[in-house]
Image (cartoon, rainbow, N blue to C red):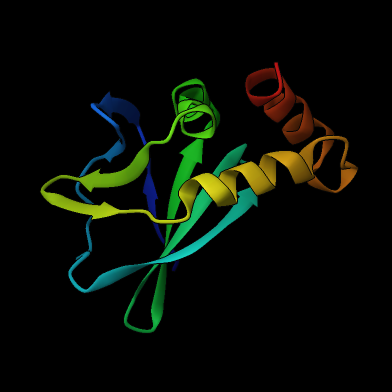
Length: 124
């Protein structure tokens, strides 16, 4: 089974953007960011990858929080994850998100619904 953390809220704190989620039912001890993002077109989410040992943990950033996440594209913000007491910086978040948004624009490979959702939030 894939380990997944669903971001529920985003907060800007000074020059930092915090992606907030409930504490997962698994440990984030020794987890490290992969500096890589994917797209889940079915769930209209961006997915940042972290690694713990030989497992990947998927940080899902769903469409409802995209307006707040958009700040990371237009301001020099460091992006962090907070799940319960666990905290971690997500390096490369801005570059990966910018790349995906640019790649999705006009690209039918991601599906019409994902393309429209990204356009409505990030390209307006």
